[in-house]
Image (cartoon, rainbow, N blue to C red; front, side):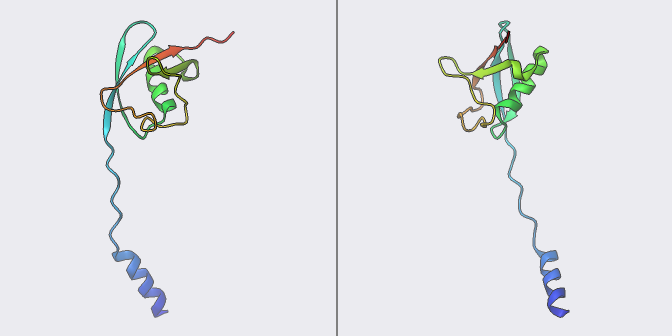
Length: 100
């Protein structure tokens, strides 16, 4: 019983682990209509999460959009912005995809 109580007290007195800081970056999205939208996001956000925010501004479905850099292939939805080395002030193109 004493051993169980000492384990409980040890758990109670340990300090909580620090949370990682969430750093927001600003990404500029060039939409198909020629306008540029500034979006605040985290580098740990996925490409799909960024597409959801950008598509909401345009009133379209995120599945009907692709994000890419000029001269690069489209970004994959499951990868993060950090995987693509998207930094503060980066500019991305939102391309609408129409399926027949």
